[in-house]
Image 1 (tube, helix red, strand yellow):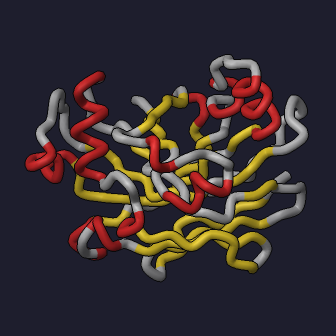
Image 2: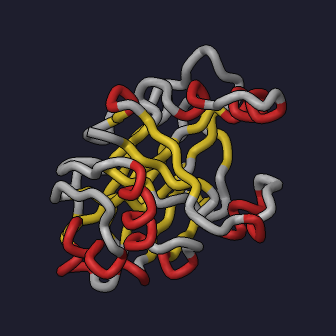
Length: 206
């Protein structure tokens, strides 16, 4: 099972991190190992190797068919449910690696850095994947509001692009990018994420 993460897929988030969205002509993606999974609304423990870990709430698509070199027209056949996830990022490690021109796998792929909602919701209950709304609250305060309509690259386009390079398998998860409003977590925080009125994530930071 792969965790595929799309970077820089919302223009305002790309800008808030100081990146130039005009340079993107195709999706940017990276991988997290399966050991990064944080399931069942278990608490997230801030690792001792980072002084700043940021939350990034994202719509997550679960692949349910084997596929390779999938044409965008047929991408919808490869998923039926979506959930929410949080891509935890050791921002200090990431910034240091970028400044030194090095890979930043350690900043993204550390253990339990990919929180995934226990529940995935059938799109038959939600509607068009191109117009879904989600939000993340920290201690009851809304920090991120996202709409898939604002994605630079939609779900089907992402599937087409990624499947050119690697086979998609049943159970693979695609984190589709985060909207603006990312920020650090501290011990004692509660994170709650809602998709179209459904609370899918609700857990604590320790």
